[in-house]
Each structure stands twice: as C-alpha cells, then as structure tokens.
Amino acid sequence: MTATETILFGTIWGLLIGGLYFALRSIRRKRRQHQPDQKP
Image 1 (cartoon, rainbow, N blue to C red):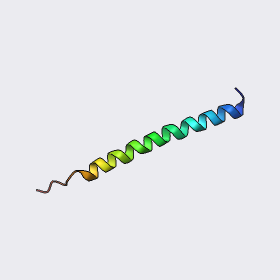
Image 2: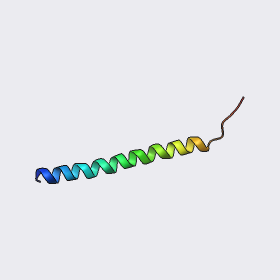
Image 3: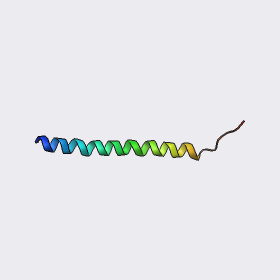
Image 4: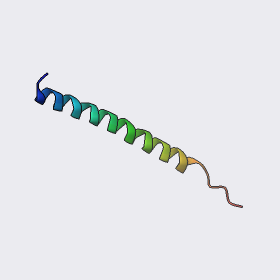
C-alpha cells in the first residue's frame, strides 16, 4: 500500500467509526428525553 492509500483507508475508517459513535450518542440522548421526568 502507498502512503496515499493508507491515508484514504484511515480517513474512511475514521469517518465510519466517528459516525457510528455520534449516532449512538444521539440515540441515547433521544431515549433519555422520551422518558418522562419524575417529579416528587
């Protein structure tokens, strides 16, 4: 593999992992918001 291919491969994987991480965080936030607030 050349340096350019390595950089492209790393960038693609970084975007995929970053996208999945961001999606999981947003899903968790939405689940928290959907839960009704329990007031004493």
